[in-house]
Image (tube, rainbow, N blue to C red; front, top):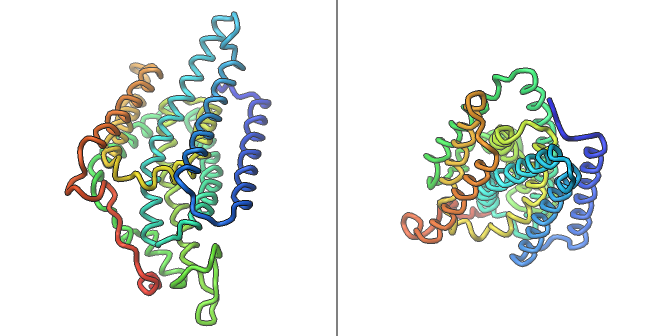
Length: 338
């Protein structure tokens, strides 16, 4: 499979991700457990978005966007558009998953000062998982072109399913993963700081925080299964696919704390995401008949997401109360111990 990624570009990108995670871990350990304010989340969200666009600016320059070679300029423009479109799609899909994270945190009454560490561990898991799935996906597409049609059908199905599920109350209590965890593990009825295990009645027992980590990991898997086919509909270049995914994930934690208190305002966003997924899936199904230009995909995604966000601000949620994700009430320690 053709890719613009040279060994040097891959090495530079890997080094950047390593340094970024190191800085993030250092900042987190220095601050300790604390509740992330909206201001802090907004600053970090802006930093990650700016870093992403600095990267795409560098990529455009590196590929010859400022040169005199017309072919190089065309390649630089095409790859830059692919990155921006993929990044935007991944960011949009991340918003829906942020609301799922919020549901998990609310259900288990995770103290605000512990949520930062949980998300950081989740991001690390997501980065490793994405790298593996993207490399496997790229290899499969290179070997079996027809897999693109399966990806397209899956995206259309996911979009339709998301549309019908939008606005419905998620039932975490009936989640099979949570049921399985409860059968296999003894869970303490209380938190013990940021520890994953504690002593309860003289027995070493998992804390609710470990269960939350496991559920967030499962959400990451589901998130990857939805989003990986979506980005392959934009481009099949492994370098663009991986970099756009990674940059979207790196800003996920900050975006969570920024949007955690705003989920009710964007109660119609799931409908917009459903439309985008159906569009991308259709684009993939038509790939051998008509290739929809990337700039059209970018424009369509921006218009749909912007429209649904604006409509969310103008149209009140059904019932005039909670938004699309009404969460179950926080359970007491005794109720969580089963």
